[in-house]
Image (cartoon, rainbow, N blue to C red; front, side, top):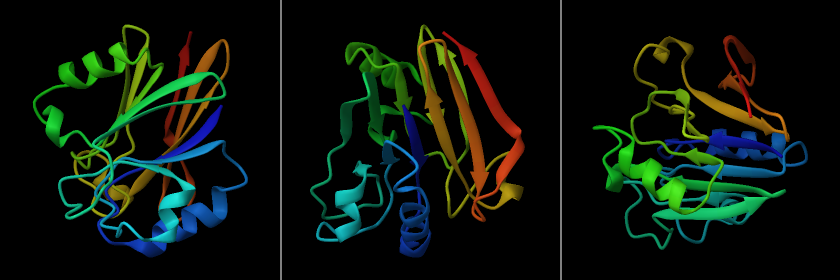
Length: 172
C-alpha cells in the first residue's frame, strides 16, 4: 500500500488541491489528519479520508477514522481529543484496539514517526504552519509505503521535493 498523509493545512485549499492533483493516481489513499478548515460541501472531501481538527468548526467530519487499504488497517485522528501534546498513549490504545498497523495524527504541527508495539505512529507535520526542529523546511507531508516485510516513510516539502534526511525504514 502507498498513501499520502497530510495535516494542518489551515485553510490553504490550494496546497490540498496541488497534492490531490499530483498524487491522486500515484497512491492508494490520501489521508488528511484534520484542521483543513474545508467546508462540509467541499468537493475535495470525496477524494480523501479526513478527520475533524480543533479548528474545523461546524463540520460533520469524524473525530477518528478506521479503514483498511490493501489489507493494511489505518487509524487516524487529529489528536486534540486524545491529548497528543501530552503523549501518545491514548492514540496508541485506540490504534491497537482497531488492530491498526498505521496510526496517523496531526495537531502538534511537528512531524515525527516512530514504532510502538507493531504500530507505526506518524505525524506528517503541518503543511502550512510547521513547528519544531523541522519548521525550517516550511511545511511537510509524508508518503508511506508498506509491504509484507517493511514500512518506508519519506517526508516531502511544500514544493513536493523529498527531504533526504527525513527518510525512514522500519522492518516488520
